[in-house]
Image (cartoon, rainbow, N blue to C red; front, side):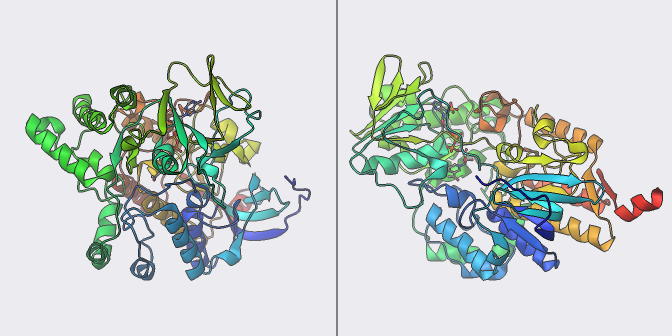
Length: 547
Ligand code: N01
């Protein structure tokens, strides 16, 4: 990696945006409309963020295509057509590229360049941003569009380098694709990525051995080709549907039932759960309004899915291993699959439980658990991400008084609204910790943050205010509120990546905001309307006048 050598800015702009995924692309578009000069830095060779990196077999979105797309442009949403109910990764990546082309975004994006540091200069009220290619850019605003799941993580098993076969991480899948035909493949992990990848890998590979630490609840997607009448119906009603989604609980229209699972008879509960199971996808969790609030309601839904797993998997011992028992349904990210459980009925697929006897080491030929050696040609790590904070704290971000973000967040992320953090003026985060982000349709939340940040920057400009910073009290209150609402739910009881539980040593803090996308949007609007309540606004001119 080339280290920056010069300390003099090679470029001076109004704003630097870090990342050219869906957040960075839309942010660039909005800032251009304000006539701000903007430079985007992107580590990849192309746009798309999550959808650029996660190219593993079977990768697709589990929010319906008609809802997982930008809503800001009527032209874009009317002209683009999705081929399937749930879009595959290649199609979503084509969409990101289409948007970049349509809006002519590439000319302000520097690719293959990673931001490594950003330091705030208090006297100038500006950020100095450095990249691994030696760029030093001075910017009034620094906007982190770095994504919530962008730092892939492999466990640090002893002997990681000794394995002679190929290794892959789902979040860094080779762009040229991988031919696993006829190979013996080990897959480590059974989260959303693995649950999508395993059925596809099993069709190619000679043998697949899945190493499972925690079984997961998964709902069939019922994916299929886009029906023209369904697409037409959406397109005809987009304005109303998008408005509804923005004010919904998680940014997805799930046709939620607004009553408790305990308020209906046993027979009626089963009928509703069956109806949702047949409909497929995450709408399952909207069968009742208290599935993540009430243990009894949750138990009923969980038991229903356990019954489905037992009926789908032929071998009773394998079925039992695949049946989740240690966390309430939905409190680890609910998975959506195509034939995941049925895949274990194939002769070439084997499940190994590593919950009690963990993987001890990688070896030359594969991996070892106790005295048992497993030999492979390839090992797939579907082991997840240092979610929500990992990417931000790996950048050397220094705010006022040289405080680093990594140090400030040592005991867990602290933000005001997930948009800013005290001590780091003019630094915005798109879908930062403390905002609905990963508990929502990411594009809905991205658009809401980008619109809020744009309005904020425009308002500061109009009033010649050149500095905005979250107030520590407002931040403390927000963090307390984020915790309070989280602990009213069943979520914190699970060892999930929402809680930082997948990373050894990471503080156990529930990171996203669970108060609901619509409520959160209203809160953000009220705060802005109330002259950015909880933020401190100032300008160099005022500071000089006060001296
Ligand atoms: O990662 P994960 P992911 N030994 O962290 C296991 C989004 N997403 O990439 O549960 C053995 O969920 C780990 O076990 P455990 C979505 O938000 C969306 O699958 O920690 N196993 C777990 O099973 C999702 O939640 C989509 O006990 C080890 C797995 O690895 C998020 O991305 C598709 C281990 C990691 O699962 C992350 O999903 C894909 C070890 N040492 C992803 N270390 C869609 O929209 C870890 N594991 C469809």
